[in-house]
Amino acid sequence: MLRRAQMTSTPPANRSFFQQAWIRFKRHPLARLGAAVLLVFYLGALFADFLAPYPEEKSFRDFSFASPTQIFWRDENGRLTRPYVCASERRRNLETFKVEVITDCEKGRYPIYFFVQGEPYRFLGLIPADLRLMGGPWLLEDKAKLFLWGTDDFGRDIWGRIWFGGRISLTIGIFAVALALVIGIFMGSISGFYAGRPVTFSIGVLNPRFWAFVRSSRWSDHLLAFLGLALVAALLWGMFQGYERYIRPDLQRVSTLALGGLGLVLGLVVLGLLLYSLVWRSHLVRALLWLSAWIGIAWLLWITVWGFLQSSRGLEAIVAGLIGAALLGAIGYILLWPRIELDLDTIIMRTVEVLAAIPDLFLLIILSVLIPMEVPPAVRFVLVVTILSFVNWGGLARIIRSQVLQLREMEFAQAAQALGAGDARIIIRHVLPGTYTYLIVAVTLAIPGFILGESGLSFLGLGIQEPATSWGLMLSKAQATGITAFTERPWLLIPGVFILLAVLAYNFMGDGLRDALDPRTKV
Image (tube, rainbow, N blue to C red; front, side, top):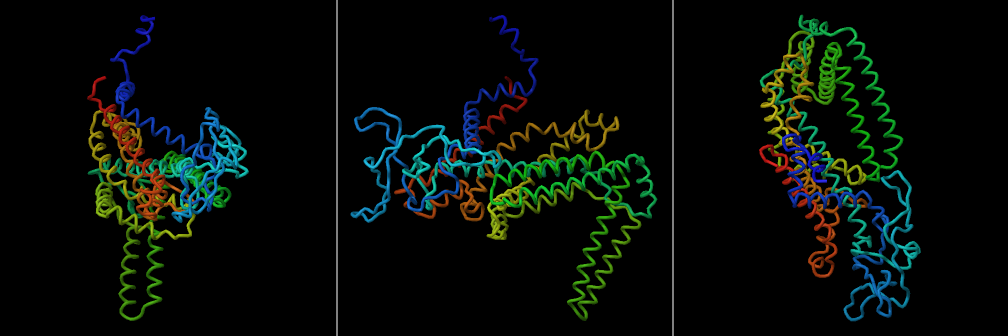
């Protein structure tokens, strides 16, 4: 057996980089603990309907701020038995004049069963189900209550809402990081690869280089490009029809909107593949896109100038007409003759500096306040994700740019360029894989920041709104009750514990991945 183990084991010299990284990661106890905690949290959020004894929106107004339900393990004779709860009711204490939940076992004992039939729900918003982790027939008949961690101000079960809120608080970090990652990688790779190399933005139709540029593509490329445009139009039409039929009628549910977001991401991926593989190869179509962009700018400028002329008189109208005529003339000259080249590196990096100069918190507050209150909670969730992503992609783009600047000068990238590979192939197949180890660590360390950002916005009342829930919104209930949350209602602070554990787990796992993916570390 020892010989067999020696034969099946891989020698250290033959292990791949990721095999060695996995061995180093398993030797990091805090990283393994963080990964286990996150696995439990995400599984709990996924099966929140199964874990919660009540639906997310169900409330018991007579049991607002009720303490956790007492669970009994012994019968009246002191013998161990199946766990059960007793009938309870809300009464006012005549001595303290406080409303209290009184448990009276003489009115009924109700055993707690596991894996029982409960109120129906839809798993992932699609599959009908009614299986619950705990409960019993008495729960459906409302003979007794089961509040493992007490209730909030509306009498809603905090145990269940913790897992329902985890769907937003845990996934918003992943979605926001994914969107920021796509923007940061795209902008950073383009900025680094084309640094010092101006890119042609447009060529006038009367410029001899224009026709030379168009003739450099084959007729088959032009035909495939127009076929690709037809497929793009069909894809956009299908995505719009799917939104109108399946997503728009049920915008109140976060799960429905999440499925719509997944469909949007897949549609955009297919759209990008079509544009790159079919449309972008035709120089004629690229030239038509240039012309369309300039004509669209001219049309917007004409509408603006015409509206200003209709509402002004005298010197203002003359100045506006002269400025509009000069700009329209410049656009007409651009359409006809010059060749315009832009330094993408300068434009992208200056944009990053402008975003970095804006305080994140104040920008988020301003943008969140601008969102109308009548917007459904699910739509607000998507808007918060989008705002968080567009504010925080600049730092990632800067680091990706610095790495791409180094990798594009390596021998393998130069060899691919010498063999005639296109810029997109060099970036995707040869340059970006050198940044994967950093990206993995950056993602695990960035997600806690987005979780805290969403929790802070919801805590301030600018993020997720009722009837949806998140850990930050639940924690705001404790803040609203003041010091009594610490003295009389400590169960309201449980969402803060989950936020702390999630952030620590991500940080521990990120530290472990950083050490494991360090190529200088020996196994």
